[in-house]
Length: 302
Ligand code: CP
Ligand code: NVA
Image: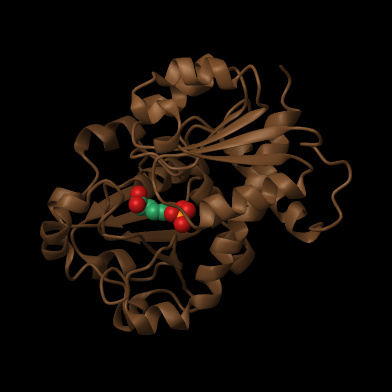
């Protein structure tokens, strides 16, 4: 693994290697020898807001012996129109790794190509691979397994999180049910590209939730879609995880949310608080999963 650009680009073995090493990172926290990023400087180049991703990478890079450098895209020449490929060629000569949060998936891929240093997608409009790796790790911690489980993704089924879940289901073989109104379902073209018989799409949240082991949701208005907020709220109202929906899921089902959460929108206050331990463990596990990813990237043969 030279970069983490998407879940699509990972094999099942690579995903499971990240999950396994995340577990080791979690249990060995505070006692990391050797330190795989010793003497390295990694940039965090962010064009969108972040709490969890920024904090977990800054802490994780330090815990692995490296130094993080946070760069708001608007503060560097990238924000004034310098091409991503030139930014990458400059940074690739000085830095040891890059963590990028932006809009276009192509920008992360171009950075990886031109920079020649390990590059991590910290969220694009297409995918959020770091979150799904942490989620898979959390799912295994809480349920003991992944491949034999059923996940129901409720809400905006065409967002970055939903897409990363589609690829995770394709690779690992668990059942994935996406429940969304027609206009926020994954497109037929995208589903054809994923081509996984274990994935189904419905407009019924009840059908998706019935007997599921995991109920998952994400915000209705992803970053960059703010102008569509009122319309999205109207279209997606009703696509909420609440206690009644949780009651349809399998006994012992868990509720997951990548956060930030908007109570009363994609999740009820009651459902969030009842499942807060799982949801905030997901947030914590970002740290452990991303340390695993970085350790695997620097360990990768050139
Ligand atoms: N889940 C997630 O990526 O959170 P942030 O936007 O706060 O980084
Ligand atoms: N789909 C959300 C995820 C936030 C972590 C967004 O892109 O804003």
